[in-house]
View 1: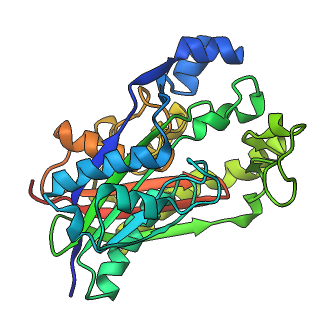
View 2 (view 1 turned 135 degrees about the vertical axis):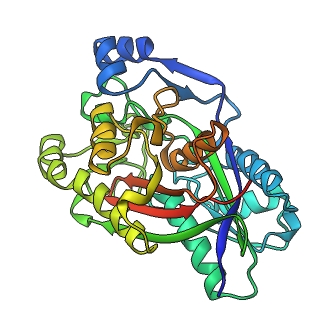
Length: 334
């Protein structure tokens, strides 16, 4: 029976930063609210050449080097690059595979908003288990939805943390940090709550509506009322289900690689799962890099010595639409 595992991790994080003070000035919020409540010491600010697929290529190159895998040995490239990318109608994964040198691989894009990396890891695991001709899967992509956030719009305050960056993972058969059980919950009742209202077939882009090409919340009060009772519980649910499907218990979790959320939500989830602050990395110096957060968190934890062989780690995410998902890993030897 195939045992898929993560053999390489790589991230690319632009050097630019937008400070809590600068976010406060732009939004009109007190700086202490940005820093303490929203949990943003600073967020990543992309440079002029930091485009989503390009960043994904740089992260992929680092992951391949970490795994000691040649690009031509990759069988499948799963692109986790977000919809907001270099070109609006475009398969980013095919470009990423070409640029990284994975000439023998086929490539495709997936999308589950900020849950896409977890979904990508699950799909890589499933591919290796289902298709004996597949031995190496590269999961990679970039994120730059911070471009779509208007800091003067109080309705998108929970997205003031959006930044930019890229992440990648190499998944191979019978090697690395074993990918285990997963859980995915989607709830389409939230599917129209957060969107870019123009530029699609319903409202084609015009000179007049270009100013509305931003992420908007269509029903802020209603969304908050409907989301608060279910969101944190769904986070806990997918973690517990992923762990149970791995033949383990929630008390076995040694590390939680999670997205950047406001500080109170981060602390609540750790307490509900019986974890300490040292068993996760709070990304307050990065902000929310979309689907990249979990890969960045695992890389930081590895480099900081927070993960030891045999540890059970769980990557957990959520994305507007809405999705909550998680996948467990059994950490292996370096």
